Length: 108
Image 1 (cartoon, one colour):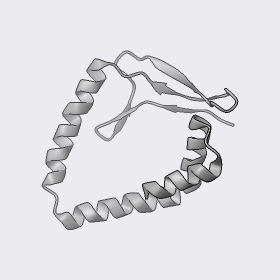
Image 2: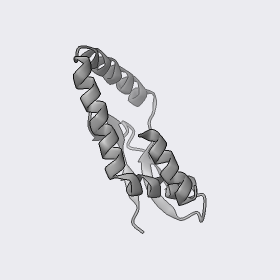
Image 3: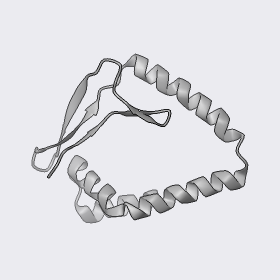
């Protein structure tokens, strides 16, 4: 199985942590490496908060029907990626695949 490496998703862009630090993620089931994640620090959190505040103000200006359409698109995308998302939950959290699928379904 290949590993997945994730940076921070800030303001619509994947970016590494300001420090460049990363942490390896292991499966709790068999301790195999499943990927790595950026290790965020205070400066990263402050940037995330500032970007979220700006996005919130922008989103509030959207008409309700457009916000509804965006949420429906997200729901559809989650459904299309159900197995990939469930496998990620299984790898990272050690959940049985059936429970992981149920978790993805609840997110829809």
